[in-house]
Length: 307
Image (tube, rainbow, N blue to C red; front, side, top):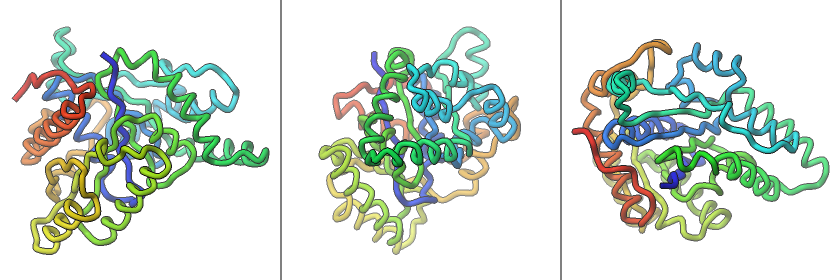
């Protein structure tokens, strides 16, 4: 089986990209027994911090882990070697950890972490390349080729590769989008987010893939069940993002914020303890995404293994 690569992306910031990434990673690993790799291309490193904590993120940096080293390999014209840059244990769920201890692994999460250093590395690369007259789009294509070579030997090891992208279109972000086969677009149900999501999908359709609509999975996050939000949801589904597949709405909840706050690198929570009332929302989100992949005829994760 070859891993499915999905980019979580939107040009609008603050729409829950990293939260959606983690909910999907947890849900697919827990409910489907999927082996998930999170690739964090956002220098803000939110996904990395949520999975690893501040201490874990610094430890990863000190150990030479992280996506910025993959960019440095590109800058040095080296053959990509991603294996040593990945942290193989980014699991926060007690159930998955205990199953691993019993040698009965049924789902796992690894991460190629980000760090604020990534943006500095990006800037160094851009200054070097642009001074030679190369266009950003051409640089993005070269980086995409580097990423593809790096991930190729890993595709048989993972079921799902989730790429968390930044809310801007740097060559690195564009490369991450271009190697994806599916696109997850988190958005809020408000006018500003609708505009941002519309602009993003139009740009991806024009610059990355003309087949975006059939490959696009939309998640409305932090949803408040108000008349205004329901009207915005209707506009998204019937006008601005018509023809896309919509997953379940993720309700606005303090629990969602708490779920993303890992106490320490050595701390674990049960799925119910981590997500509380949102546990069923995590399940519905992973079910809907698995169904979306199966409908597309792509490599869907294994059959559900837990309730």
